Image (cartoon, rainbow over all chains, first blue to last red; front, top):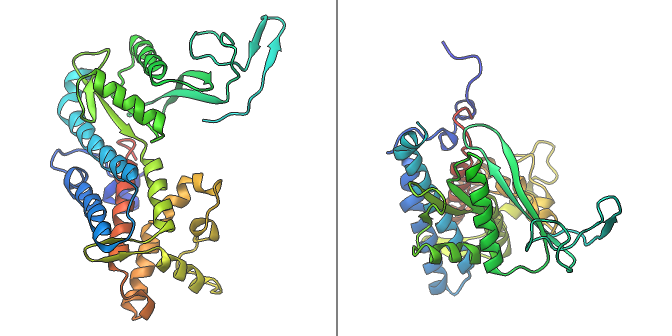
Length: 85
Length: 243
């Protein structure tokens, strides 16, 4: 039987906004590897094609935030319980 | 944030309000008129609480003062019983300089530093993902980009907008001129920046490609870009366990 009030991520069928409950979550890999690589790919490609990409600052900030979130969520998962309780 | 310069005198408190307050704890201790406000906010991770912890009115501010204010607030908040785990700012140059100062002082150039107050946990540093998505949207609308697969262009979205303009039933109901040609004020809206990359727009453009529309045949790299940016936002938009 379904609970009366379903979580938003279940109602919207969007796994990207689901709670982080597993250290092997695909989203953590995406934040740590896939997305920074994609940003690098754009930054490397536009030079060769004579076009413009992200500004250096925006590209750096995107990677910085992505990596920081990855580390932060990983930290929550591994260490938070020992800090709080 | 920028604020309108205004000074007023309180006769009962014998104090002038509206002056720079960054060097002392009291308002009106420095004889410069403030035109910005710096606000520190605590955002709870397990419940929906956002508490203003401290705010300062200021005009120009050096990185050293900014660093000192931040350390004071960290001390104050931690001593009140809160555990600060992540310091989030937008990517304005002064905040970038603050992060650099924090990282250099901690002897660590990573995106986390040893916590300045609680020595058993790290303090993560991060830029606000809402600003990141708005910056990306601005660049995406401003010029074409490319990957090894081809060109990333916002022209497909503009074509979709003009295509559905006269239709009584639109594939993307919310796509407006404000999304595609925002002025400086409209650029601050986060919702519209996210909607630009949303799955509804991506699905509509994909459909036009699959339906054989000649204008949309090279849309692959643009779709990948939009999907990645939307995923970036969604992944960061996980705010609680009950969401």
